[in-house]
Length: 240
View 1 (cartoon, one colour):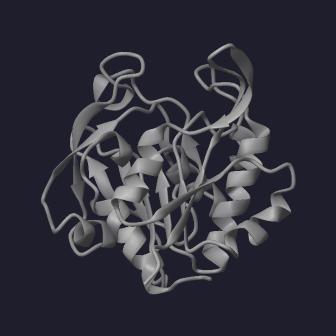
View 2 (tube, rainbow, N blue to C red; view 1 turned 180 degrees about the vertical axis):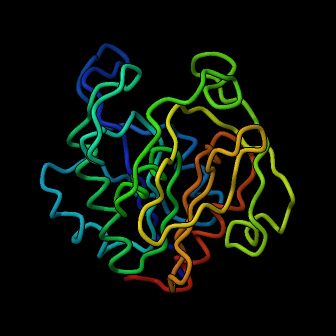
C-alpha cells in the first residue's frame, strides 16, 4: 500500500532569512514533516491560499491533515475583543486554516490539530479561547523558544487514551500562552494539565473518523504515537 499523503499547514512570514536573502516565505519547522515521514507518511506542505475556497480542492488530493502551531488566532474569529497580551493578526493564515479544518471535518478526513491547530479546531466549531494563561514555565516554556515538558492526564476510554496506551499521565513538550475556553459544538476535552486543569486535548465523540487536537507539540519530542495514529487512519481510508 502506498504511504498516505498528509498535508501540513505552514507559517507565512513577511521577512524570512536564508543565505543572502530576506523575503516573504511560507515555512514550517522541519520537525513537523520529519515526524510525518517517520510515522510512515508522505508530507505535503499547504501554504496559505488567498482563496479559502481552494481548501476543498487541496484536500481532495490528500489522505490526512495536520494543522500546526503558530501565532495567536485573531479574537475576531470567535467574537472577542483583542486582549493586551494577544499577538498581531494573521488574517490570511486564519482564513485558510479554518477553511481546511472545516473541509476536513466535512469530508471526514483524519485530522491532527497541534497547539494553534487545536485552538482553531475549537473556533471552527464555535468555541472560544483564553487569550493569555499565567506566565508559567509549564505553559509558556522555561525561556523564549524553548519547549518545556509538563504532565497531562488523558481521560480514560477516549481516543487520546487509546493512542497513548491508557497511560495515567504523560509528559509532553509545550510552548503556548493561549488555550481553549468555551468548548466548540460537539467537542470534548479529553486531556488536561495536571497542574491547573487546562484543556490539553480535544476530540469529537461520535465522529466516524480520526479527529484529535492536542495543545502540546509532539513534533518537539520523540513520541510518534499521535502521528502514527493519524497516518494509520489516513492509510486505512485512502482519499485518493
